[in-house]
Length: 250
Length: 250
Image (cartoon, rainbow over all chains, first blue to last red; front, side):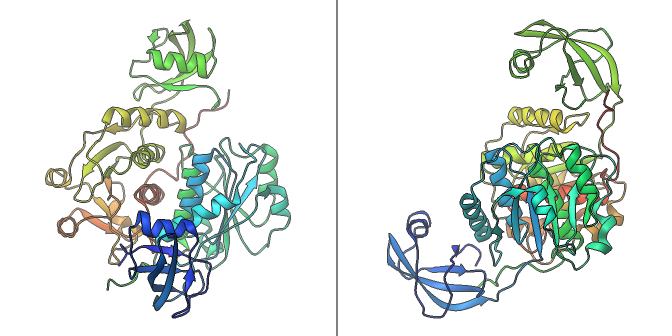
């Protein structure tokens, strides 16, 4: 069933209650996927599970009619990614990968060495939606407006450990913190190319909720560090022991 | 010291023995990095450690003169990546990330669902060199000519476990195999978009040296699966407990 087109909608999913799609999604289903009236589309909205819908309306203004719920709503673990914006293609990649790897929210942060201050939240949201559709998750991570790192840290909820990927030699592997991370919300902070400034590193290391970790002996690009750190967390205390979200083939 | 330009050369590194650079590297050092005669460049060749060299020659034909060895030669663990070629940008990304994550060799494999049969080994080699320069590793992974998966499997050295990332639900997390993977050469196999054919999966699962693993409940794109699987291996039995390769600042 995973080859059936799958899209996200912000609308409620209720049996028989029509959903009018915007032009972009209409075009995608009729032009790219070449679906015609009566075709089946899988739809999720982050709240009401996944529904099998049938396609109606016109090619430019598709209407979807929910038929039956095929999957229950589930949500991944409470994990936030904080990252410093870098070059465009690589930042896009970070948003896509964070979505695939199951983060619940994405918070861009401005740091001393960050490479750009242009952050388009609407673009990140589109990328997150597209990645969520592809990766079979049942929700879309929320993307927050970019904020300065010190501001974010000053308002931190102290029961949420912040895993800080430090390129210096004095950090421990993530598994050192297994116990403290077990069954807790968490966040992972990845710096820009060039890492964090001495001032930032000092500040981070002075905070009780910060856990500095190492990502091995080679220097990783920021987007690689994102995937590696999220992988380690999901594997250590996240949902990687669970069965796939994929629906039964039918 | 990591901000000093760092390049790979296939030439021997011997004190005082000049190395003539090809046009591309000459241009990189003089035009992009804007280095002038007498500037310091870090150079490695995968055999003789890293050397501090001084720049001479002309802007279009740079000569480097090795001054002193600043790092000993080390090599990462014996890990091979097998992957099925996908779309160009994402394949490039796989080669770059595999290099950052310390694989020793890269073997493209043709599978039933692979998306392209055009594989340019010379391009992969350039990408691997560039990534090795950036990631501070002391060698460059070898890139092999693409081969058909059954052919590769038929000539497999049986003492090298092949970790097979299977999207089906019946696989175990990688840590299940910690003992069998400990202090052994290994290889990781990542399929194309759409995964492996039923025939391929049956063949893979029938082989003693194959260890099917899961990469969590969401569907990962091929390039994400590469980074995740290599991260787990490096973290579990690879070199991620070691101190960085970075030279001392001096």
